[in-house]
Length: 214
Image 1 (cartoon, helix red, strand yellow):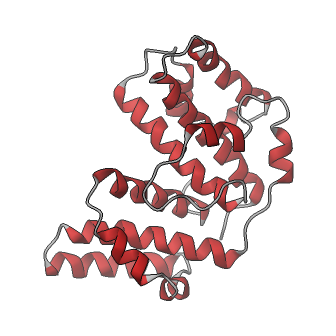
Image 2 (cartoon, one colour):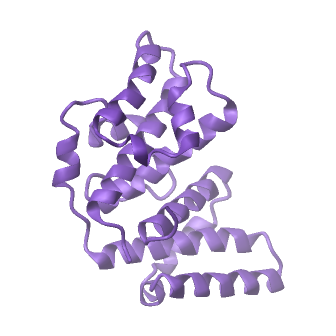
Image 3 (cartoon, one colour):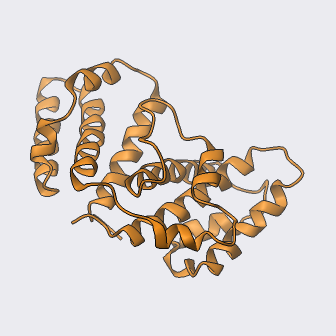
Protein backbone atom coordinates (compact mmCIF):
# COMPACT_ATOMS: atom_id res chain seq x y z
CA UNK A 1 0.00 0.00 0.00
CA UNK A 2 1.38 3.41 -1.01
CA UNK A 3 2.23 5.78 1.83
CA UNK A 4 -0.13 8.64 2.55
CA UNK A 5 0.63 12.03 1.04
CA UNK A 6 1.27 13.43 4.54
CA UNK A 7 3.73 10.68 5.48
CA UNK A 8 5.49 11.03 2.13
CA UNK A 9 5.76 14.80 2.46
CA UNK A 10 7.23 14.59 5.95
CA UNK A 11 9.83 12.05 4.84
CA UNK A 12 10.66 14.11 1.76
CA UNK A 13 11.31 17.19 3.92
CA UNK A 14 13.50 15.27 6.38
CA UNK A 15 15.48 13.60 3.61
CA UNK A 16 15.76 16.86 1.69
CA UNK A 17 17.13 18.56 4.79
CA UNK A 18 19.76 15.84 5.06
CA UNK A 19 20.68 16.33 1.42
CA UNK A 20 21.05 20.06 2.00
CA UNK A 21 23.22 19.34 5.05
CA UNK A 22 25.51 17.23 2.86
CA UNK A 23 25.89 20.08 0.38
CA UNK A 24 26.66 22.58 3.15
CA UNK A 25 29.51 20.38 4.37
CA UNK A 26 31.36 20.91 1.11
CA UNK A 27 30.33 24.55 0.63
CA UNK A 28 32.74 27.32 1.60
CA UNK A 29 30.23 30.04 2.42
CA UNK A 30 30.07 32.45 5.37
CA UNK A 31 26.60 31.23 6.29
CA UNK A 32 27.22 27.48 6.04
CA UNK A 33 27.98 27.06 9.75
CA UNK A 34 24.89 29.04 10.78
CA UNK A 35 22.61 27.22 8.35
CA UNK A 36 23.78 23.82 9.59
CA UNK A 37 22.90 24.77 13.16
CA UNK A 38 19.38 25.78 12.14
CA UNK A 39 18.31 22.57 10.37
CA UNK A 40 17.38 20.34 13.30
CA UNK A 41 15.61 23.11 15.29
CA UNK A 42 13.61 23.93 12.16
CA UNK A 43 12.48 20.31 11.76
CA UNK A 44 11.50 20.26 15.42
CA UNK A 45 9.44 23.41 14.92
CA UNK A 46 7.53 21.52 12.24
CA UNK A 47 6.93 18.74 14.81
CA UNK A 48 9.01 16.30 12.78
CA UNK A 49 11.45 15.58 15.59
CA UNK A 50 10.02 12.16 16.43
CA UNK A 51 10.19 11.14 12.76
CA UNK A 52 13.95 11.56 12.50
CA UNK A 53 16.01 8.39 12.82
CA UNK A 54 18.80 8.51 15.46
CA UNK A 55 21.60 8.35 12.88
CA UNK A 56 20.05 11.18 10.89
CA UNK A 57 19.55 13.24 14.03
CA UNK A 58 23.25 12.75 14.78
CA UNK A 59 24.11 14.03 11.30
CA UNK A 60 21.98 17.12 11.77
CA UNK A 61 23.48 17.76 15.21
CA UNK A 62 27.06 17.63 13.91
CA UNK A 63 28.63 21.08 13.49
CA UNK A 64 29.67 22.25 10.06
CA UNK A 65 33.05 20.89 9.02
CA UNK A 66 32.94 17.91 11.39
CA UNK A 67 30.73 15.49 9.46
CA UNK A 68 32.50 12.14 8.86
CA UNK A 69 32.78 10.94 5.29
CA UNK A 70 30.30 8.10 5.74
CA UNK A 71 27.77 10.51 7.24
CA UNK A 72 28.24 12.89 4.31
CA UNK A 73 27.52 10.00 1.95
CA UNK A 74 24.41 8.96 3.88
CA UNK A 75 23.07 12.52 3.92
CA UNK A 76 23.83 13.00 0.21
CA UNK A 77 21.92 9.89 -0.84
CA UNK A 78 18.97 10.80 1.38
CA UNK A 79 18.72 13.96 -0.66
CA UNK A 80 18.36 11.82 -3.76
CA UNK A 81 15.60 9.86 -2.05
CA UNK A 82 13.89 13.16 -1.25
CA UNK A 83 13.73 13.98 -4.95
CA UNK A 84 11.82 10.77 -5.68
CA UNK A 85 9.45 11.25 -2.75
CA UNK A 86 9.02 14.90 -3.70
CA UNK A 87 8.13 13.80 -7.23
CA UNK A 88 5.50 11.43 -5.79
CA UNK A 89 3.75 14.37 -4.10
CA UNK A 90 4.08 16.59 -7.19
CA UNK A 91 6.74 18.97 -5.85
CA UNK A 92 9.48 17.86 -8.25
CA UNK A 93 9.69 16.82 -11.88
CA UNK A 94 10.61 13.18 -12.40
CA UNK A 95 14.26 12.71 -11.37
CA UNK A 96 16.72 12.98 -14.23
CA UNK A 97 17.71 9.59 -15.57
CA UNK A 98 21.44 10.04 -14.84
CA UNK A 99 21.97 13.31 -12.97
CA UNK A 100 21.66 13.84 -9.20
CA UNK A 101 19.27 16.39 -7.76
CA UNK A 102 20.43 19.99 -7.39
CA UNK A 103 20.66 20.88 -3.67
CA UNK A 104 19.14 24.23 -4.57
CA UNK A 105 16.03 22.43 -5.80
CA UNK A 106 15.76 20.62 -2.48
CA UNK A 107 15.85 23.93 -0.62
CA UNK A 108 13.39 25.66 -2.92
CA UNK A 109 10.86 22.89 -3.56
CA UNK A 110 10.77 21.65 0.04
CA UNK A 111 10.88 25.18 1.53
CA UNK A 112 13.78 24.23 3.78
CA UNK A 113 14.25 26.64 6.71
CA UNK A 114 11.15 28.62 5.78
CA UNK A 115 8.58 29.19 8.54
CA UNK A 116 5.60 28.39 6.33
CA UNK A 117 6.88 24.98 5.21
CA UNK A 118 3.95 23.36 7.03
CA UNK A 119 1.78 24.62 4.17
CA UNK A 120 3.72 22.30 1.89
CA UNK A 121 2.63 19.33 4.01
CA UNK A 122 -1.01 20.30 4.18
CA UNK A 123 -1.17 21.11 0.48
CA UNK A 124 0.66 18.08 -0.89
CA UNK A 125 -1.09 15.44 -2.99
CA UNK A 126 0.04 12.12 -4.40
CA UNK A 127 0.39 11.54 -8.10
CA UNK A 128 -1.97 9.00 -9.71
CA UNK A 129 -1.18 5.47 -8.54
CA UNK A 130 -0.35 4.25 -12.04
CA UNK A 131 2.39 6.91 -12.37
CA UNK A 132 3.89 5.98 -9.02
CA UNK A 133 3.68 2.25 -9.77
CA UNK A 134 5.31 2.63 -13.18
CA UNK A 135 8.24 4.70 -11.94
CA UNK A 136 8.79 2.51 -8.89
CA UNK A 137 8.80 -0.57 -11.13
CA UNK A 138 11.33 1.12 -13.39
CA UNK A 139 13.66 1.99 -10.50
CA UNK A 140 13.48 -1.51 -9.03
CA UNK A 141 14.14 -3.01 -12.45
CA UNK A 142 17.13 -0.76 -13.04
CA UNK A 143 18.66 -1.67 -9.68
CA UNK A 144 18.35 -5.39 -10.32
CA UNK A 145 19.55 -5.16 -13.91
CA UNK A 146 22.66 -3.26 -12.82
CA UNK A 147 23.31 -5.98 -10.25
CA UNK A 148 22.78 -8.70 -12.85
CA UNK A 149 25.11 -7.05 -15.38
CA UNK A 150 28.11 -7.98 -13.21
CA UNK A 151 27.13 -11.65 -13.01
CA UNK A 152 27.18 -14.71 -15.20
CA UNK A 153 24.08 -16.28 -16.74
CA UNK A 154 23.23 -18.30 -13.63
CA UNK A 155 23.53 -15.25 -11.40
CA UNK A 156 21.49 -13.16 -13.81
CA UNK A 157 18.69 -15.72 -13.72
CA UNK A 158 18.70 -15.64 -9.93
CA UNK A 159 18.60 -11.83 -9.86
CA UNK A 160 15.75 -11.80 -12.37
CA UNK A 161 13.76 -14.23 -10.24
CA UNK A 162 14.34 -12.03 -7.19
CA UNK A 163 13.15 -9.01 -9.18
CA UNK A 164 9.97 -10.72 -10.33
CA UNK A 165 9.19 -11.82 -6.78
CA UNK A 166 9.87 -8.30 -5.52
CA UNK A 167 7.61 -6.75 -8.13
CA UNK A 168 4.84 -9.21 -7.32
CA UNK A 169 5.22 -8.46 -3.60
CA UNK A 170 4.54 -4.78 -4.29
CA UNK A 171 1.80 -5.40 -6.83
CA UNK A 172 3.95 -4.08 -9.68
CA UNK A 173 3.79 -6.99 -12.11
CA UNK A 174 1.51 -5.07 -14.49
CA UNK A 175 3.64 -1.94 -14.13
CA UNK A 176 6.71 -3.98 -15.09
CA UNK A 177 5.06 -4.79 -18.41
CA UNK A 178 4.87 -1.06 -19.09
CA UNK A 179 8.55 -0.40 -18.36
CA UNK A 180 10.21 1.39 -21.27
CA UNK A 181 12.61 -1.22 -22.60
CA UNK A 182 14.52 1.22 -24.80
CA UNK A 183 15.16 3.58 -21.89
CA UNK A 184 16.17 0.65 -19.73
CA UNK A 185 18.73 -0.63 -22.23
CA UNK A 186 20.09 2.88 -22.80
CA UNK A 187 20.73 3.35 -19.09
CA UNK A 188 22.29 -0.08 -18.72
CA UNK A 189 24.96 1.04 -21.16
CA UNK A 190 26.01 3.74 -18.68
CA UNK A 191 28.89 2.41 -16.61
CA UNK A 192 29.34 5.30 -14.16
CA UNK A 193 29.11 3.97 -10.58
CA UNK A 194 27.24 7.14 -9.60
CA UNK A 195 24.34 6.21 -11.89
CA UNK A 196 24.17 2.71 -10.44
CA UNK A 197 24.15 4.35 -7.02
CA UNK A 198 21.27 6.58 -8.05
CA UNK A 199 19.08 3.59 -8.88
CA UNK A 200 20.08 1.69 -5.76
CA UNK A 201 18.86 4.68 -3.72
CA UNK A 202 15.79 5.30 -5.86
CA UNK A 203 14.79 1.67 -5.56
CA UNK A 204 15.04 1.83 -1.77
CA UNK A 205 12.99 5.03 -1.75
CA UNK A 206 10.44 3.39 -4.04
CA UNK A 207 10.15 0.42 -1.69
CA UNK A 208 9.57 2.77 1.24
CA UNK A 209 6.96 4.69 -0.75
CA UNK A 210 5.18 1.43 -1.50
CA UNK A 211 4.99 0.60 2.20
CA UNK A 212 8.16 -1.32 3.07
CA UNK A 213 9.94 -0.49 6.32
CA UNK A 214 9.49 2.34 8.76
